[in-house]
Image (cartoon, rainbow, N blue to C red; front, side, top):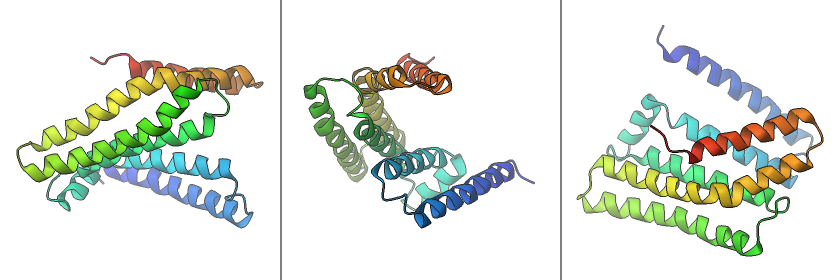
Length: 188
């Protein structure tokens, strides 16, 4: 039995449960609700980010593209798309300025497109190493998230925490704020 068997088993159980929940929501016609669609999109994007971070999956997927680090690109783009969906969901709740909302609405998709175009250009020129391709996508994503976290995500989470009436949900938003704070703090 390999080390990946428990991970595969837990992943399979999770997908069966989520498949059941998804089909149940579909049969009850609750998927047409905009909030439900956004929640499912965020979940699947987060799962995609985590699934593509498994070294064996990454290796198999990258081999199909001539060992180009395509999984790193997809992961980083998925993080930025998840951030955008989160913004769309919370933009009516929080109180950032209209200018900040407009900036995020235009700049974040532009960052995604620039990341992909730069990756394709760097891969096509053959002057850059595979590590450089991986770091390019991570660096652009990191810079974007460092800017968006205090300007877009913290205000939304603070406002959601203030509006929440249940203590357990207040704790959840507090923990989310702490998570974003650790994302900002430089690593070792």
